[in-house]
Image (cartoon, rainbow, N blue to C red; front, side):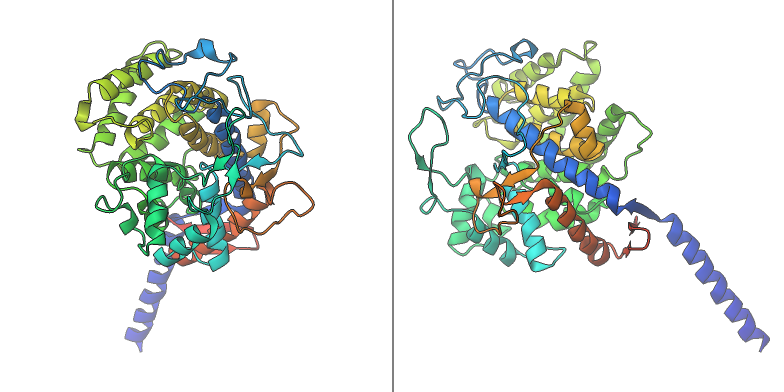
Length: 445
């Protein structure tokens, strides 16, 4: 009897210790605060995307487009892109804002993320399968043949445009032939696997798995491997990790310190011997050693010399859409932007190459970190659009705003995002949704 009582006492003690350990190994996140941050993500990303589009491919380091833009070009007349055309929405290199009543147009920096967001909702799942991804792509993304005619530029003739580029284009062709991810990114099938595509379509998976980068990488794996492998895959994972850990960063630090901590954590994801890891280390050291932190152009120019011209660290530049050169340019804007959303977007827009992609990435991340109101305050705008026009580039989505232009609102997109995170927390993290306190309880391990 005494032995049984001792055993019972020991069991109770163990349970008590386990409960205490569990409390210490969890983090609680307000669902209401997170929704406001997701709202900031969508708004920040749209502002940055449409600002960066103004200078997209204007300067790609070729003799015809040198010299690159500098800070002195901000506010000046936009130049034609490498394909010889202007953008339709602005003729000035400056921040672009969509006003109320004018929906934010979908672009490849937001529309495929929107599609993945919708697929998670539609299938009520926390982890998309290869079949669900393929079906979603074929249903919601036009092929080259069935795309509608579109007047993309003010001085161009209407032409078919399915708004897919490089590796994503090839991935969709392969899906139509019956191939599934990750085989759609295998070099033997997809020669464009080293392009930028996955970097701009998968960051959202980091936000769908707050704190837990392991879970974020798990749910992002197939979407990334839809169109990327090797260096392009690792860069995409870098961005996913930063977005996931943004919920874990020490908020008492300055935004500059927060973004640098996130970048250093994500750097651990890059294989040390990879070209993109060496690119990261080079840009980071160039930033640290530069006494004049306003002279971001020096590091950008060094990137051009080192990688595009001299092919250092195993990098053989061939295309301005490549993951590597755009990752380097992206880091220039991140480090020199120092956590300021306006300055980061400004530098990203002027840095060159595929300038709308890094700006959209950092606009979304910083928009999430400072929240919706923080974005409003940063740009000092009180008349910004909250609607979104997904059918500008994609198809077959429900019209959630039949009385408004566009098919959705950023507010509702953020709200529905909370439901997806609920499933990820429960199904992938073994955490729980505390509805009484409107928070998630997320195990850190």
